[in-house]
Length: 513
Ligand code: BG6
Image 1 (cartoon, protein in one colour):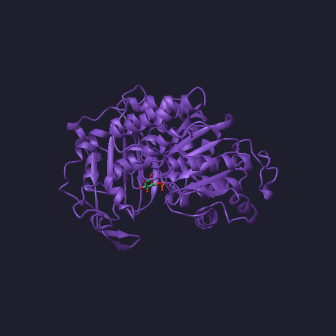
Image 2: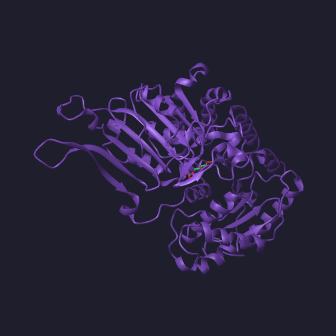
Image 3: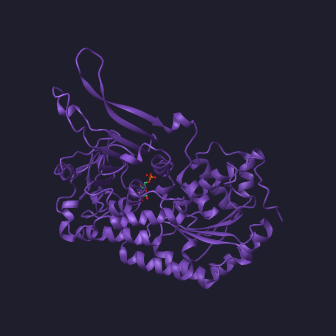
């Protein structure tokens, strides 16, 4: 048996950080799927290459596809080669990592499969010193979640042998509406305790989203102005230039609101708007975020058209090339009612944010891929430079660029050189790339490592997930009504005209990032 305390990355001996995870086995349900190949295994490999995984760390991939360990290792090598961004595969690191990769086929509905899995895990514990520690990762189609959770419980895999720990990561979507999210929460909590459950939202693993808390709470200058006295409104944008690609089947059931706003953007909003915590602890942070979401004013069914807008792209351009409309994409109905663009205005009913609107928007086939939070400050109270056209005096804005080109900038007015007073908006800029000169880890690296270390701060808690669905339901229900105006934006544009009208009614404009 290998000594679990000794990591096998021979190239980085001695570099183990105190952040490193305990030895464990990660069991991936849905191992033949896209996420495993594009994100999970490349992220695990990157952690190994950074010496953050314990010696003996192992992965058991499982799915319906028959495959042996060797074939799985080969497929994962290709995946790491293609998708890991931690640099080229290092021979010795790969060899050591690959020795811990196993595959066992499973029929998720059959108890025998789980018994077999338990045997495989026990063998790995014996041979690789993983001490009974298990991290289950459920990354299958959501229709299989219930069976997997129930049968893990029925076969005793929800409790670790030999005093080890067992945790379960559940991929999004966590439910497709309030009702199904409640059922799923109930099912999970019948088998696992809340502190074993890690509901993943990969936006929380993004370096720049984590930095929102650091910006707010490690600096003295922002928090005093982080409120209704100084802030006019906040815009949170997640724009994508891609269409739905080959995910039409899933997207038809989801739509932009469920896919991006209900989870990712609401989480970002919670980080921007929550109250400070007194200690950095998973439940303290999640309590504050939950309190914040609870303070968001519910949108009544009859008010949906005042608070939310939907759109769907028709044909247009992407990267200068002509592209089809959404209704012509693979696995999409030619009469589809699904929104590929959504925008919403949330009002937070608490002292800090009273009457400060938070505008959230997300869409596919917009002009570029960009995610940002724009904190738009109030205008200067007295206009001294009256001869300057007021349109030229932009209010100050603090822009948190989540991706790409991660960083933060502050826009303010400055005098242009010359005898006359001409004023222009300039930008003070911080860029991750140039300031730190090192890559930001992939979101999944951080989240997988945290789950292995038992830190759930960056995972969604059950109560917040249900609250997010509660807020969302009136909008989704109203949008069941056929959208006779679809498609209503051209692929490659900034979304439907209705979205511009929506924010302009409040005397504001969308930023063009
Ligand atoms: C996923 C959505 O959760 O997030 C996708 O299902 C979307 O539709 C993706 O493209 C965006 O993630 P990222 O990390 O590329 O911003």
